Picture (cartoon, rainbow, N blue to C red):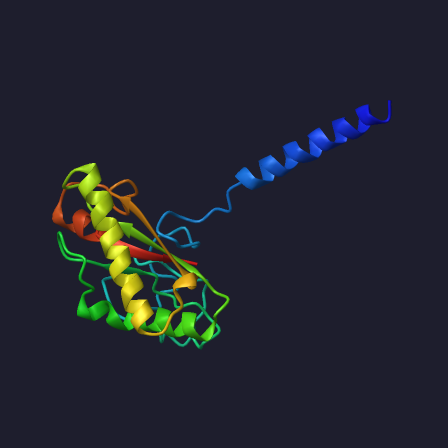
Length: 181
């Protein structure tokens, strides 16, 4: 009869473990934790425009430089792409470089590159384009010395828009890769 109370306790512990595994940690779908989906504290590197969906950091970078010392994750965590393109735009190369520097100096850190597209095109095409965009960033990081084991690529296609609407401004905000640490 000792087995019955033990089995009940085991069932309760397993249920609690499942519930804990399903809990959410918050944040937004663009990778920011500040809830604004925009710039944190108004600091940034000057790429993009204010309110353009650049993911905020954790309040680091009080000096406004936008790039962290080797121990801090860079604040700007979103880069944007041209229509139907997976080429990293020149104005975002410095952002990707700062992430490469951080990852190279912190070999235990890892990042998920989340590829996104606007709503134009089929679901399948957009999933493939989002993957190509995230893959282009992954290749750039690799060329800068980041270990492949630190990087994971995922594509959300058009499924997680940063901006709603069917105009060019909304489309431009949705064509992106988010660095999710």
